[in-house]
Length: 116
Image 1 (cartoon, rainbow, N blue to C red):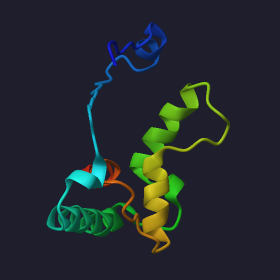
Image 2 (tube, one colour; image 1 turned 90 degrees about the vertical axis):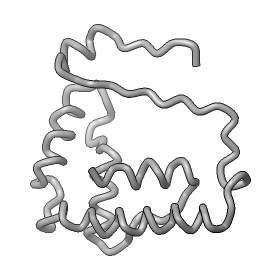
Image 3 (tube, rainbow, N blue to C red; image 1 turned 120 degrees about the vertical axis):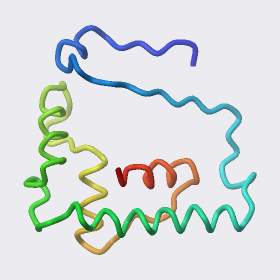
Image 4 (cartoon, rainbow, N blue to C red; image 1 turned 135 degrees about the vertical axis):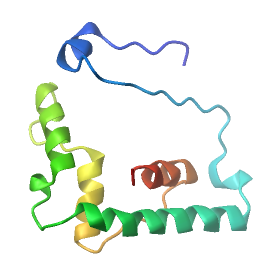
């Protein structure tokens, strides 16, 4: 990636937004990690699933304060009707006792970091 561009229309919708960009080069995922490192990532992901339970106070995910903010943001984008953010899916999985499992180390770490 040589350039990251955010169109003016985005800033019109979200003038107070803060963006972060993470660029990884030559990532080999689990090929470069030891069994202990992979187990540590699994532990982090499991702890994240447990922490997420406190953000699911009731069965109606759409009533969750954080989800409401994301739904409001998504409603301003020209997306497919009914599109949901990944956070909502993660919370639904926790609610239905189907926690997020390991995918790839980079994805697992991203899912773990969402606990905040």
